[in-house]
Image 1 (cartoon, rainbow, N blue to C red):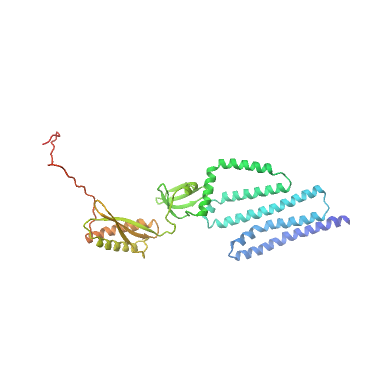
Image 2: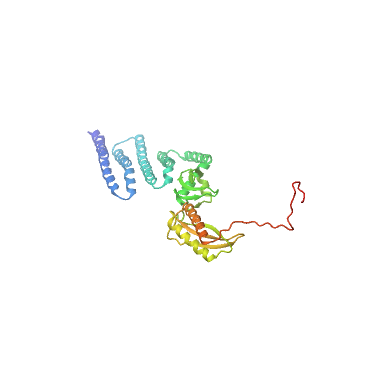
Length: 351
């Protein structure tokens, strides 16, 4: 009877508690998951998906804690029981954080291209960090000295950092690109070396740029961060397109301006990629050797549109200048000789 009172009642209570935990918690989590799916906030979905199994482990550890306190245990068994409870609690915390981070990363990868391309590396890094912290906490709770482990991890981390210096530099440069967003996927950029094209991918190690001839440039992220890059999509896609033109010195400059602006306006309205509501204008700037030069300022919807707009503008302007009698000069070299011209015979002697 004493045995039943000492061990039977606590054991029965533990069994009933475990039965309730493993039966009620899944039903409750299913209800919460249905509620979370109806919500517009993503965080509650992450919490519900990450909470179920860690919550079960947590409640099981509480039941075991009450059971261990209710029954007479030897000091050695009590020590192992305490260690088991510690492991269960830390394991529950580890599984909760791991699931929460992975769920969040999977959700953000649909919106952030960098996370999508770096998901494998980021998941591994997060799991290593969380698992390492969990292991250190378990060892500390078991009264195992962790100082040698910390020293070994410090030396090992230094060796790994030196061995993977370039890789780590590119990885953290990728994080900087993701955070500061100097460029984004889809932007049209021009590199310091002269290449230009659309950013097609920003990964954890390198960035890919697709050029207009459909070639791809692969650049380490560290170079992207440390180079001068023109982003033609910042602060907006719409931009000015400048065309250099020259007319003869005998031209009526007021007439030239009226005709040029009229042609430019027609091109912007009729050509795909032109900003129809923009009023083009010109600015004279140079007395050149053969012409008076000026710049025509047009406006296009994005960088690559300037090619077609400029193409149409030059064709129409050339045709209109010919109709209006406006001279488009071309280089002429006039050679002046001192004295009468001399004729040389076939032998090279003067005639």
